Structures are given as structure tokens and as C-alpha cells.
Amino acid sequence: MKINEYMDTAIKEDRIDYYYRRRTNEVHEILDLLRKYNHKLIGKSDHGEIIFSLNDVYYFESVDKKTFACLKNEVLKIEVRLSELENAYYEYGFIRVNKSMVLNIYKINSLKTELNMRVTALLDNGEKVQINRSYKSKFNLFLKTMNEGGFDNEIDN
Image (cartoon, rainbow, N blue to C red; front, side, top):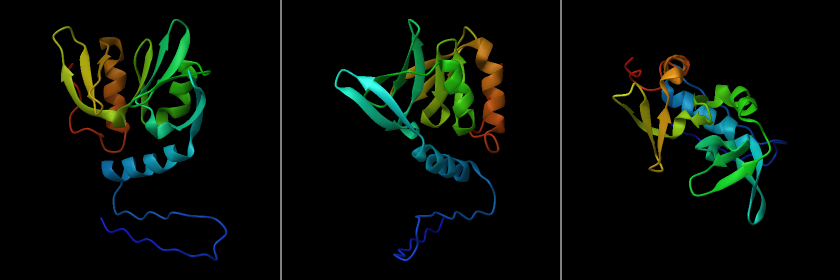
């Protein structure tokens, strides 16, 4: 991939034009990264409110009717329902994987099928997340539709 960068002080707004021959997984990931960068959320920690990018989220999780955004090294409480997050960020690679979690598929390092029909997703920060069997078919369909499959193989049924 060839990357050209130009500075033009005469333009009124920064802009990125991205040309591609085929919409591959790499192209999709780059476009998603650019789009997610513009999506900012506000979370609460012990130190106050923090503004963070959607791109930094590994997963959203609901615990005791409270929703949390789990980042690489931080967990922030957010004031958005899990179902709203799932609907709003589906097109950016976020999918429900169990009753209490919406996962960012771009943070998955590998997938492993377990004996109990569940699947374990190993995230690039070392965490393991369970994809329950009732969500597995929707997850497989999601992977297929995410730009020519996203991952090379779907999870075995």
C-alpha cells in the first residue's frame, strides 16, 4: 500500500481521500479506524470524567444494570444502555457476544471453539471473552458480512 501525505495551509478543513482497488479486510479496518476516531464518548472513573475514542474500546459490558467501556488498561462507567451501543456501533465492528457484552471484533487476536459449544475470543490485550452459543450464528454472519469475511474462517457449529 502506497501512502502519500500532503500539507496544504490553504485548505479550510483537513481531509483524507482513500483510494482502493478492492474493499478488502485491510481497507475496511482502515476506514473503520478513521470513522471510529471521530466518535468520542464520555466515561466516568474515580478521577472524574474522561473523553475517549470509540476506537479504544475493547468491549462494552453491563454489570448490575450499569454499563462500562473496557479499554486496554482502564474501565469507565458510561451512561448508555448496552442495546443502544450495539445498534449505534454495529457498522463499526461491535457485536453482541453474550447477554452482557458487546465486543469490538477488531480487538480479537484469535478464536477458539470450546467443547460446550461456546467460543473463546482472545483479545489483543490478553483478555479472554466468551461468545455464547446462542450468539454464535449471529456472530458468524457478522464476520461474513464484515467486508469479505473479516476473519478467514467462521466458527464451527
